[in-house]
Length: 513
Image (tube, rainbow, N blue to C red):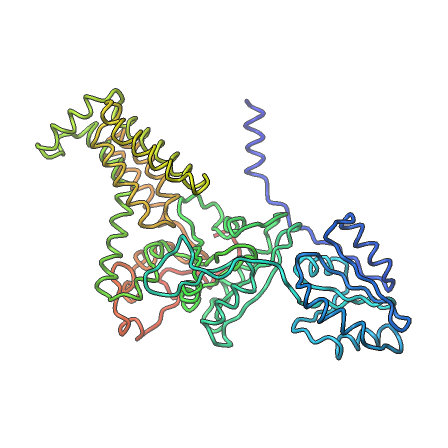
């Protein structure tokens, strides 16, 4: 046991290893030597294709990865023009002729290392090599299959664009560029993951972004020492404040390009990850969980009404079961007299204590939700039928659970889906409030609520107070928090994320904040 504790201590207290600098291998003038190195690095993988040909005494090689390039463009736009041309002079002159006159692709990049060859061919480029010259030419002729642009399933709006992000990075960049037709909109690419070599893109407005936030973001991204990055969730924890143990994230996520453009226009920075149909947004505030694109498409009074519904649904989702258990177990006098008899009879008729009963029902509900989410779609109806029969009518009639408890759980489950992005913290906090109410009553519920509130108030996202503009308070920014003002008022003065009260973005760029 002592050894196990020490191992855990070493894991969590050990400083993160610094990112190793990768060694580069310069290209050789020999085509055969370069291709031999590539075949050895790929261990003669079946998808590595090397096409060699000799023209006017000069040997050429075209290197690709099968399935990553457009074969039609490769045949008629690369191989045919190169093979139909006559070459004279040195290999360097032949290389320059191919680069300047023979090939006319939009993306042409000269590369000088084997590592660059690996990166480009695995990104859908075709690499042209000339024997006798220690450089190669990468041509952008990507042709891999990808999902078409469609409406995201998890971020549906009634009025607005039906376009959502897809997996290829360049397509997502074009979706943002179509909406932000200004040269101030900048895309900056980086590569993370020592093995996956995943491309990411920082999207921001050069005139309104905070230089301090941008420097800090790049510093945190460069410190990521992961081998593989398959989704945006891999890098999100590295963007959080150090020592942050909050249930809520300071990194936003969206699958809608119009939402991302709106955040960028407020001084935020969006992070696109190749292979992920969503974008990360930093900095991110707590009140933004309750804002959707429909709020700005509808009339101001209706947007305000729906926003209050979201706040009420959030508090019901996390606190109602805990309050119900606390009042039923310790403070039954708080129930109305007509309701007290029915609830007391229901509690007396069930074999389990009220707290245990509520936890069991919530646990079964979470199992059903996870099963319905993971199982094949044709079997989803079976889960609904079994859940309605087992947890609903049969369990109540058998006296295993009480009808009031079941109604509380059902209402809580419905409210938790009003804000899908908050479901994860809501599900965990719900159990904690039930446990607190079971042991300490209403005082335990309020104590836990105060702890959560203090945790949120003490959190920052890139030196921006997480609870801004509520705390610290800003009257100007409050026009889009609890109340959504009309566009005539919102357009009079624009506020950026770095202008929030209580910010400290002008300090040092250290991450010890």
